[in-house]
Length: 64
Image (cartoon, rainbow, N blue to C red):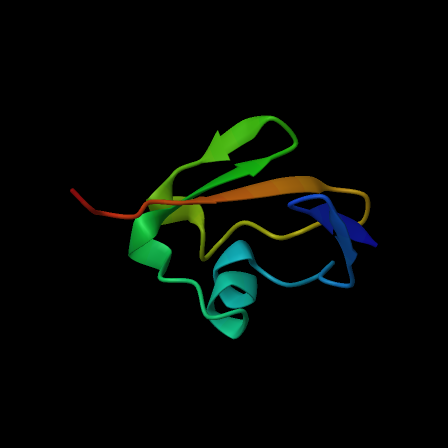
């Protein structure tokens, strides 16, 4: 199991990009932290989610 934004998920073995896409995130508007390391946008497609990972997904929103 993996902890994503405080919730246990069965996402091990997927890339971060695949997980984000499946969950409906706009990948151009998020920052992802995996085990306290920020993952650069250009590495989301190649970074695998491992069993036991702690992942935080932060979404940018616009407004005024």
